[in-house]
Figure 1 (tube, rainbow over the protein chains, first blue to last red):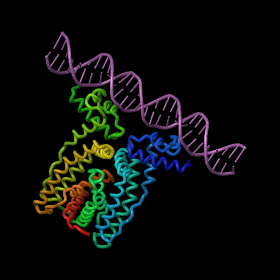
Figure 2: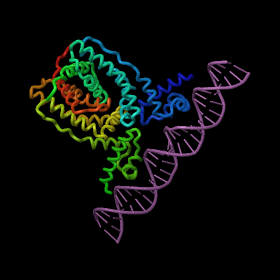
Figure 3: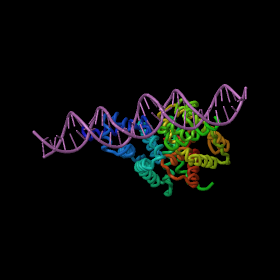
Figure 4: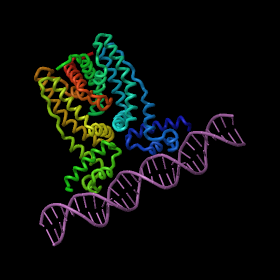
Length: 191
Length: 191
DNA sequence: ATACGACAGAACGCAACCGTTTCGTCGCCT
DNA sequence: AGGCGACGAAACGGTTGCGTTCTGTCGTAT
C-alpha cells in the first residue's frame, strides 16, 4: 500500500470513528484498527489526536456551496435551504458536525477551524445572494447581511439538529417564504 | 453528610464535569472525586453513567420559561429571545447543551430526554404567544406554530452556538423585528 | 446503649488507550 | 544488487476508568 492510500484510509477511518463515537471517545487505536493501519503510520503524520482531527476535517471541509441565482430572493433562499438540508441529511455530517461544535466550546483550535470553514462556505454565497436581491430592488441597500444569514440557516439547523424534526420540501417552501419576508420586513426600526 | 446533600453534590459535579469534559470523556470517578464522594454513593443511586446523566439532566431541565405578554407580537418575541439569550449565556448551559445534543445523535435515550424537555419548556409558551397575537389580529388564525418556533429560536441558537458571534441587545431587537415580519409574511403561498 | 444504614476511602482485577519502540517485510529507486 | 523508506504488527510501561468489595466512621432512630 502506498502512502497516499494509507492517508486516505486513515481519513475515512477518522470520519467513521468520529461519527460513531464522537471526538471525546474516539481513540487513535480505533482509527488505526479501522483503517487497517499501524499506529506508526498515524504518528508519522500527526503528533496528536487533535492535530489529526483538525487536519482531516479542514481538508474535507473545503467543499463550496453553489451560488443560487433563480431571479428572486425567495427562490435563491429556497435553493440555499435545499443545499443545506441535503448536506445535513448526510449521516456522517449529521453526527460529526454537532459533535465538533460541542467540542469547539472547549477547544479554541477546533472552534477556529469550524469558524473558518463556515465563513468560507457561506458568507460569500450569502453576500452575493443579498447583493443580487438589492440590485433587483427586492431589498434596501443597507440590508443587514449578518442578520439575513442567521434567519436563513438558523431555523434549518435548529430544526434538523436540535428538534430533530423532519424537513419536508413543503416545510422548506414555507421557511423560504418566511425568511424572505423577514429580510424585507426587517427595516421597521423601533418598538 | 446526609443523603440529600450527597445527591446534590453529585448533581452539581455531574454538571461541572459535563461542561468541562463533555459526556464522552466524563468519568464516574471524576464525578465522585469532584463531589467529594465515594463511588459507592453513586452506584447506590444509578446503575450507569447514562442513567445518571439522564436523571440529573432531566431533573434540572424542568425550569419553565415565563410567558411573555407585552401586548404586541414583536414585543413578546423580543422577551422570549432575551430569556433564551440569557439562558445560553450561562456557561454551564452553553457547554452542556451542545454536548448533549451531539450525544443525542447517537443515543436515543438522551435524544428523547432532550426532546421532552424542549417540548415542555417551549411549545406551550409559543402556542400561547401565537394565540395572543391571533386574538389581537396580528396573525391569521391558521398561523404555523411549528414554523414560528423555528424562526424565533433558530436564528438565536445558530448565532450563539454555531457561529459563536456576540448577541447584543440591538441584535435581538433586529432579530425580533425580522421574526415578527416572517410570521406575518409567511402567508403568501405559491411559486 | 445499641444497632443500623449511609457514608468516604482504599484497593481489587480487568480492560482500554496512551505514545513509543522494535522487528521483519515489501516496493521502489538507482 | 543493494539501500532506503514506509509499512503492519506486536510489545513496552504507564495511566485511567470500570464495577465491585472491604473497612472503619458517624449520625440517627430505637
